[in-house]
Length: 453
Image (tube, rainbow, N blue to C red):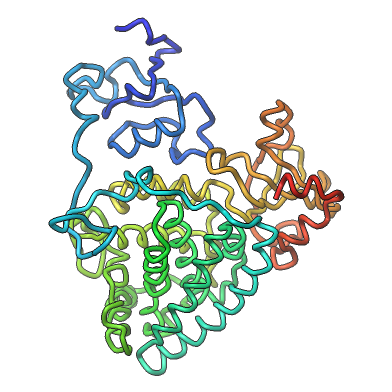
């Protein structure tokens, strides 16, 4: 074995440029937290994992024995090199434009991000927050109108839906963190309304991460908004039932993708928006989804994106019958089901884009203080900027801005590291009582505010 490989507790130190499919990655050269790899140790199973390792790390530690690839080709061998240059997964697609290539074959947008220009924020989170609050408030009213129309008239105003989504797109392009904050404020009795809005917001933000053009962000945001609209045609006693559904009730609930498509087909100018995402967002890569049990290679890219985001928001949302998971718990479940329920390439990118502490997360620090996450560096999601609002005794204090990344670089972050994520309402903290603007404006001195914002 080449001398550049260094032994460490039974592992081999490997430059990320030489990681191959089949290797068991046991350690990274950085913290696992904040990466999309939410299990501390995994077998490299695809090109998307290798790509993400190369983006995040300089080297990793892998098992030097064949424990996890016993009976298979040794990934250290020269013959295994060809696995790293395999043709990216292509599939049949019903989509057009950036979502497809010649012959209806496409390369995953998650693997080609670097080919497109990044969207740089044009405003600070403080500046955008006041606009995002108004946009979100107006969107709630518009969504209520859409749901009422869907229930009573069995159709929707597509132009109104487009207007709603356009507001989200413009805000996210200016600064995504402000509108993402809004998705953290949830009302269990308004689940369907908020779910439609939040799936759209996350879909647009993910489109920004994938560096899609504005028109394509509009498209994926509209599909996210409409994907679960068919649920309004499910009987309310089933939709909001607090106990477990019967087999018959589950069968009715699983008809909502078809009901959503029918809604669009009944709507003026809605036929062309009867997208695959509406009917396919509960299909799975292992063909065990519904309503049609489609094979993975028939699922368009937008369907794969919405499938992940729909599941994520459903998991983190409290219902009248259950508490929601933390973002980290939801992302761990997505990670475990990548390649089975979800597209692996998009799942890894989405996990990294959200991170364990998205804006609006309430967190308890190791020193006992409680803070609210404001934003984070995309490369260091585990070290966000936050506003500490409770002291170590859980008493209210004047908001204090803490930048965990800056403290970490200075070697002073230990007592401020995040210990756990709290639920909205814990220790009397309700996100409705806070805004980014008020949290920042409580900081004395404009220079600190400018540096942070």
